[in-house]
Image 1 (cartoon, rainbow, N blue to C red):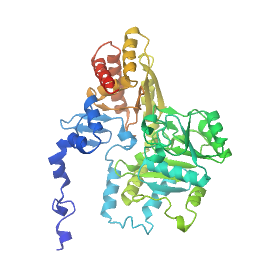
Image 2: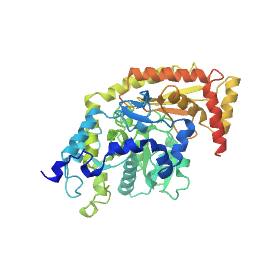
Image 3: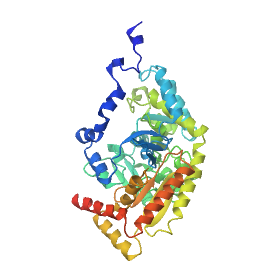
Image 4: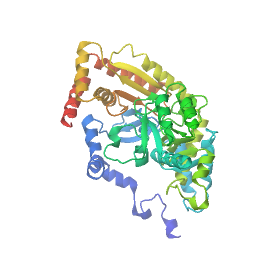
Length: 473
């Protein structure tokens, strides 16, 4: 028996590395390790707001702690866990691809899995022809920006105010949040236009130097949707001025909004480039994809000398491609997108029915399972004075006051939709159903009852947040 045969890859003797033993020995140090070696502000923030939980395992739309308590995930890893955690089909595909011992990433061959995944993706966007695979959403946007600028020969890219397209330098250039951009200039030539403002778009296009407009059909920050008819009108303006439309579907794509892509809610919209990532990974292997028209790709890759003019070391790796193929198979075979439409409408309508009941609740909006809950200034004097106290310290504190008891008292994980925003964003796994809707609405109603009672734990926590906000000015 050879050495390779005598120790299986999963045994502790294989290479002398035992992952389970390492975690058993060191997992309790998780927050200390982050504080010492990674972003030291993350554990500090989690401790401050009481999010410093220890989750032992996860499956589907739930986490469990060491005591066996379940937590409902309404965040899905910022949208990465579209199919929930550890979907069996995706998990099996990854076991299968590892067991095949493929000759992956040789750099000088053409493996079948990237072509098969591109074929399946493009079937959902029949007006597009080719795909570049990278490793993340921001890489997908970077690729689209490069392709658009090269294909048009123009330097400037337009984006929408309050947009979020990623945090690497190119995608940061089209990020509409100043807090992310501050201190990282100079960036690429760019100009922000208000979402839905065709006049502002046309003014910029008349200058003749615009390569493209990049837009989220529904913005992640605040969950703001482009007005009806805007994307098609913007597309016509762009093409009239020989510029391109880039749809950033990193968060909204793959069924999140009740269609495969969010731009498909509007008839006649056919973006020149489309960016996807997040849910395509199955929650396991980072992957991003830039889909585009044939002429754009052929202009970028115009000769054999330019064959690697845009590439990624880990792009198209077998594990990522297998995960992507498994995700698309599940979306189709389990009719996930149709389920999103049904569950999303149930959740949105039940929350919207609470707007007239609670004066602190201003709006409920969104599509599918991408829903924004916005809070606003109340009418009653007692609540108005408390609201004013929070706003004076820092805008967004009330939304944080809601998020915390949802986790602490009801074991539901949610997020504030953006800095200085009184909006909670719900982007749960696409597999949730009526049971999860009932649990969230019941918990949210209890938190709102507490907030409107004039006392209670929510306002006690609010005072703590105010002190923290003032201390860190």
